[in-house]
Image 1 (spheres, rainbow, N blue to C red):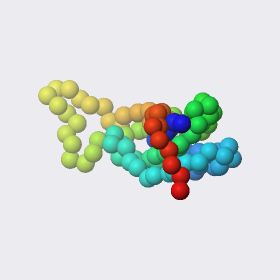
Image 2: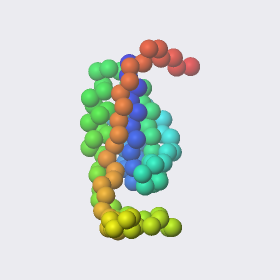
Image 3: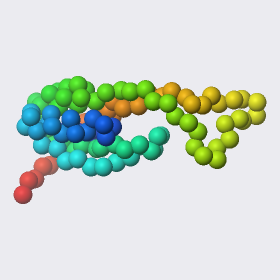
Amino acid sequence: MKLVIAIVQDKDSDQLSNQFIEHDVRATKLASSGSFLRSGNSTFLIGIDDQRVDEVLEIIKHVSKKRRKFITPPVGVDTHVEGVRNNYPRQVSIGGATVFVLDVAQFEQY
């Protein structure tokens, strides 16, 4: 048994939930936020048999899309530092998924 922890962008979370239901994958969805852009994320906790881990990873990979986004500096932040100019707005890559797969020592369901 494995515990898959998948952190995805909120834009992908509903479609991912639907795919899990369609493929009979039980998942618990938690609201979370990223520290980089402080944007909304969803964290999925999935307990799954070892032989289905690759299937779950493929579903996550298929649904979770990387995107490009323009960011601006936070209010009150000086964008000029000792002769070095930080270019804003700046384009960054966001989205996709961060996934952890952990061994489960014991699993109980009541």
